[in-house]
Every structure is written in structure tokens, then in C-alpha cells.
Amino acid sequence: MVVTTLTLLYLLFGVGGGDTQTTIERMDALVQEIVLDKKRMKQARSVLKEMKKESKRFQKELFGIRGKLLSIDAKHDASLDEYRAVFKEADEAWFRTEKTLIELRFRMKDHMTRPEWRALFAGLENEPASAAR
Image (cartoon, rainbow, N blue to C red):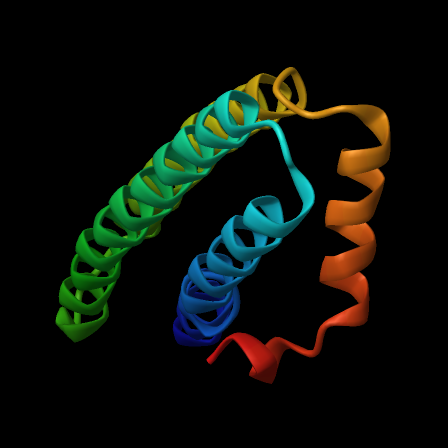
């Protein structure tokens, strides 16, 4: 069970989180360069701000879930059901955030032209992650 817990913790906290924040910041900088229409740029940046807020909220929620897992791990007589309840909570948190971020993605797309959209993601692919730090 500890291996499962450690794996979940790695997946939840070892990847994403800070990388998501960095990606959103990189996207914001690229949107400012790519989207020339000021109104649409402001709208796209507003959506990115919501994405960043959701990402931070999710990380905070995961931190609470991590604490619950550590508490269960510390109990000598922890049950499988206790773990399952926390894993279910983590799954539900993930699905809520996934739904929100996908909805925001479509809202952002509505504020950008097809060439701007392509340029945004081409810029993300071509820019090393360390460049935004």
C-alpha cells in the first residue's frame, strides 16, 4: 500500500503543478506577442488567468489530499477502504479540474484565430521550459 501511496504522490505532486503554472505563464507571454487585436488579447489573457487560478486551486486541494494519505500511512492499522476513499477524492478532484480546464481551453480558442492558435502552440513546442523561469 505504501508503494501505491508513493506512486500517487509522485503522480500528483512530482509532475504538473509548477510545470502547469510555468506553461500558463509562457502561454500568456506568447498571447501578448501573437494576438494583435487588443480586445481579443485581453479576453484570451483573462481565460489564462482563470486557468492559472484553477491550477493553483487544484494544487492546494491536492496538498490536502496528500496530508490525508500521509495520515493514513502513519496508522499501523489503516484499512484499504481508508485509502480507497482518499484515492476516490483525488480522482474526483482531478476530473473536476480537468473539466474546468477543458472548458476554459474552448473559451480561449474562441478569442483566437486559427493562425494565432497554431502560432501559440508552435511557440510552446519550440521554447525550452527553462526559458520562462
